[in-house]
Length: 87
Image 1 (cartoon, rainbow, N blue to C red):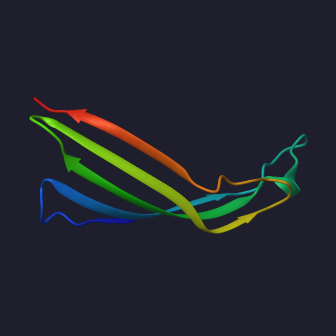
Image 2 (cartoon, one colour; image 1 turned 180 degrees about the vertical axis):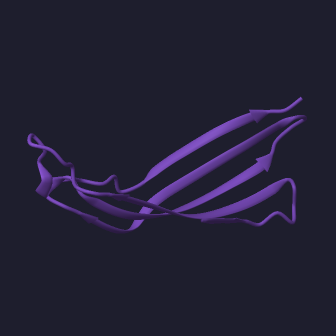
Image 3 (cartoon, rainbow, N blue to C red; image 1 turned 135 degrees about the horizontal axis):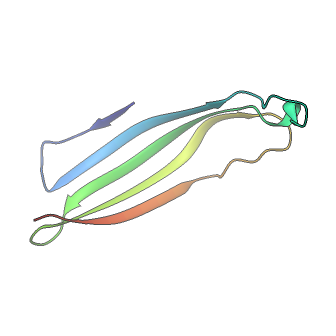
């Protein structure tokens, strides 16, 4: 689920809520108590026009809720940046 504020084509802020849910592993060799997870991440980002036909983007995401079974760990935050060249 997400939203993008697109009133200015040169600068578009974005907000997303990303949900990840995983059931416990199944089968004889599975470590069932330590494999289920539920994580809700909030992602903030922006897409902007640079020069000519170049666009840039940047995003940062962090958990606002996590329930991890066993000894699992979730990353405290992730980020990404990119450049798009149009014709």
